[in-house]
Image (cartoon, rainbow, N blue to C red; front, top):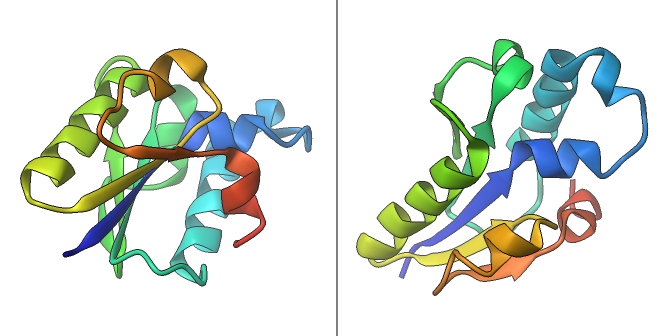
Length: 120
């Protein structure tokens, strides 16, 4: 069974106070680059970006990382991506610290941004 990791880009970037708010596109690009070389057991990583962060990474697939630009709000896109992956029969994990989002991505497992950052 394939496994998919859906990453709440804004939430992960925002979990580290490194000045990301001054360059959201650059912060998204750095996260994307780290995900490309991350040592995880997931078959696919879906990075969801919203707002100014979308300017840092083009939408589409690079290796095992697919970047998705949220049309409106990131949470709705994260839920949609998790649902699509589950419908394809994948085991889905969502990385976010957003409690409201975490409560609404069932049947996905939810892990924290710190879990992901420890691996990238």
